[in-house]
Amino acid sequence: MIDGRRFNSIIANAGVMATPYGRTIDGFETQFGTNHLGHFALINRIEPLLADNGRLVVLSSQAHRVADIDLEDPNFEKQDYHPFVAYGRSKTANSLFAVEFNRRHRDRGIAAASVMPGNSITDIARNFSPEELQGLFETIRDSRTQAGLPLPQLKDVTQAAATSVWAAVVADSKEIGGKYLEDCAVAPVEDTPNPFADGVRLYALDADSAKQLWARSEELVGAA
Image (cartoon, rainbow, N blue to C red; front, top):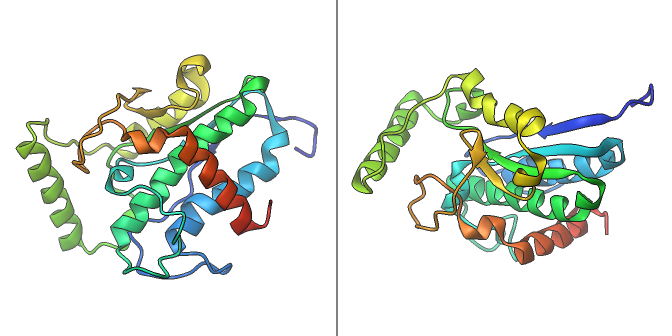
């Protein structure tokens, strides 16, 4: 900071969802570039301003359950583009970024965690028509019903922000570091392939994948 003060918490909250195929100004697939690489570049630039014993909160999503990262073809140059697959990959990347950031900076007492805010109606759904959005909610409902899970509940915006705020200022940093959080708690591992289940897929917490993503991200943003 200009006046010498440091950040106690940083919440990496920018994002786009299920966009048509496109590229950022730097040539990256829109969702991977915006949701992951943008945060990766910014947070690493300002990391010295994060106070010892501070927190980094990275917004992930239940959609991480849709797809693991693909470091061989992050920009969909060799495969068909699917908006929700690209979104899922970027949200897995958010979780893995938090895992590796936490490992790299925990000697300063910093805790980094990823967060599933919950389903809510915000402008992030602007790429869906009302009919498409209704269809998505019906798909989620049917999938959870078939799996014997409770019906999904929409959160209002303040409720959706609660887990991020909890992670940033309330939660025990020793408990949340390197973890995936939902509903103001550390989420359980639930490795069923059901994309609409609660909990976190194992691949989104994998330490080796997190290291590989970090190295690939450095290559892509020119920070190696």
